Length: 465
Image 1 (cartoon, rainbow, N blue to C red):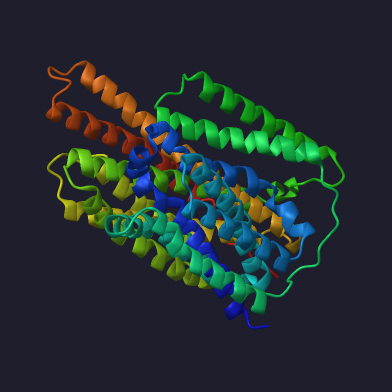
Image 2: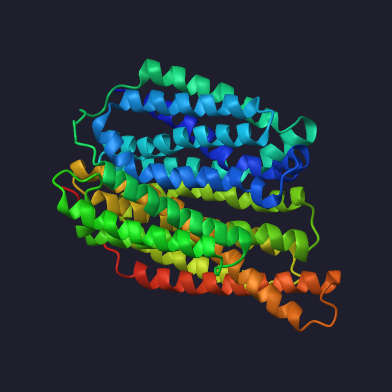
């Protein structure tokens, strides 16, 4: 079988799906004016998207087992295309939000299918390179999303963001119909409704709770506390049920493998660092340095590009030499980068920001792909769908966690700084308060990076026979 057209169909659709995840962020201010909505309402265009991914991805392993590869691919692309069409022609905010949710269903199915297909098509000794290419898609698309969307909005309008993505998704659908075979044999596994309900409440509650805390800036909100409590309790009951029913939705035997567990933990730490930097640096550059939004985005673009390119290089190094040296070096580099960002001031050179953000993104590409691939390599083939579901769920959850923690630490520091300022409403004090908040948030990321370094010392290469 020729894997090139198969991977092309999956990667094109995956790239466009991840591109649309962040592209609409640049249009939020315009949408608030056009639809007359508040910032908290507009933020649901992003939070709702992430929430659907957080709910759907944990049950994707079951879907991959029950349905053929072609059926899942066609279904995911149909959801994505339908969502894009609804969003593109939406006359109201409610219709636009509905389109985003429909689109997120397609992306959730597609991301899980992409990971699983790589595990099926490539042997373990080539899997690092393949996963590196997937990493290029997963990291490069969100990086260029805001920049490309900004250009579209400046010269056209926000509707064109969706019209621009639509032809690529249609092409990927037709390409997949022509070349994508069925790679697995479906298993008619019984669907446990209670497990799906618990998974939805659990993962949905955690993602929503952290996302809402990050947006509102407070952990004492009854909504945040209720969501996190309900989510944690539901996940606990979900885990117990998976261990007690004959046909679990998610096979928890994946957690019997020590390198898989360590890979998941390291992935959690790495994504907290990545998402923290991605939310903090634009705020710092716009408010602390007084740069325009477009200028801030351009300064961060090189980091996103080198992250994607380095993912492929890291994959090749992993295939030849294993993960340990990559992970240790990566965390040493990330520790240096986040230490620098914890010391930024209003006089910090933008060129230093570009350099250290590139260093951070290179270091994280040395960590994420090898840790995930090494962990999944320890699983038996029958556990690949479950392992992929766990990895992708952790990526989405850690993104919400990293964003929420970074914003919360920054906001708390700002309030403390302004409470003792002589002129708390002045532009100078407001700017310095935000810079102090960014410094403290990156100090927390520094601690996470050091813990990740310690964890990397215990990683061992999985020798697959």
